[in-house]
Length: 318
Image 1: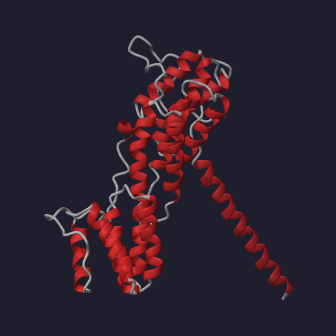
Image 2 (image 1 turned 90 degrees about the horizontal axis):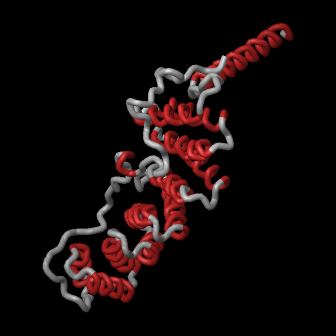
Image 3 (image 1 turned 60 degrees about the vertical axis):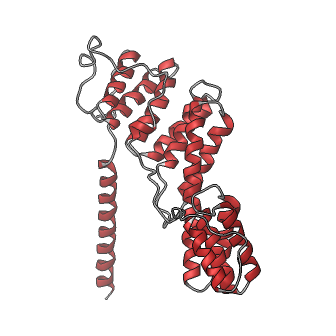
């Protein structure tokens, strides 16, 4: 009996060790390329990395820019390479590494002329991770904070101009999440909980496309609760601000069917606004973010990179 137990325990240990070995092997197989150490001119390493960026070979570009830092850590090129590495990670959708690289640049060079770009790169990384309103919105909150940071720190920069536009989109996304939850509560006969969600849209996101619907849903919820005064008041707010919106026409019908008389008559039929929709947040990266402006252009035909830097993927260290 003891011998059988011993054999089972041994077998279990071997299996666990085997699984662990396979897991480690899998992790090792995912390692990104890294150049073998070979002393090279800094300009050549950097321009080769820029060339790999132009070819959309993101991992190879990272390898060359990291080699710039490794071989020439105190050079001007090394400072530039930090941002270029972060940009290459961003292009490959490796957002965590891109954010880490941007943070490192900000910590090392807080007053540099390229620091606004680093803050903006962080914000874009969070922005592109925003998911549909039906899912968790953690990245949306991070994107909003990062975009506001860009606007507050560098209000007159080109990055702040784009950040303001994206803040509006993010607010619309957050309002959409509140609307989704509020509608759920309303459908499941929890009007009081629904009111809290719709009030949040009115109080925090009143400039978004969801505001007319939120006011209409408040009319619905308050009528369900028997609070006709609150229903009429929110209907009036909707009518004064959006007299031609279809949401107000629907609210007007609800109120008049209950014998209540809103203060504003609906105007000509407009378009229904605030309907749940998905924002086109993911765009072509080339149209969203460019490499750091100060970065030298990729080498031209007169600057050969093939003599000292192989065109194929960098090999792993021996």
